[in-house]
Amino acid sequence: MTQFKFSSVGFKIVAVLFLAVFLAAGCSRGPLSVEEETTEPQLLQRTIDESALASLSATELYAEQIISYKTGGRLSLFDVDLDVPAGAVANDTVFSIRIPDPAVFFNEFGTDGLVFDEPVTVTMSYRDANLTGVDETTIRIGWFDERTGHFEDISCKVDYANKVVTGQLDHFSAYGLISD
Image: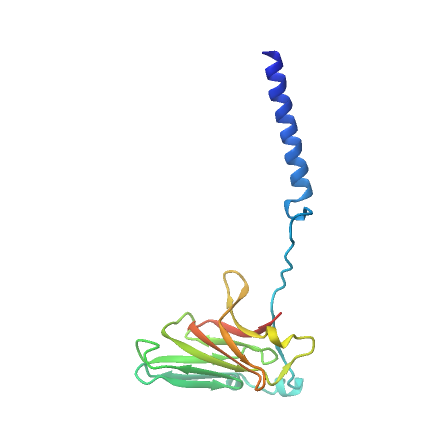
């Protein structure tokens, strides 16, 4: 019986030591694991002259329009177009675009949190983007998830010749042109 207790204690000690070594080494750093390189996408920057940016007023960085649920409509501001189809919302609704910082391709679409019955098409031009160090094939539209603090990609198409990205939105929040 003494032999059994010693084996049981010895086994526990070996198990605890093994676990301690495993945890100290880090399970994701082993030679058989593959480390993923995760980089946050970056907002595209505009190449607009700083003095031109400084001269823009808040009213020039905001547009709103009531869009009919029966006919739909279009709202545009600078390099952003929202095309709202008929039936996207249940009632006539105020749609808005706000550019909080004209130095980056980041837009707040409102009414914030609005969910659509039919997708709304967003078209963003990046003709004025500073593409230094940017792989153009990684440019896409992402919505900013405030809960996670990260951009979430949306399905979109890029027209490289005209430097335009088009995507379908199912809800409103903040959207930006991002790249890796």
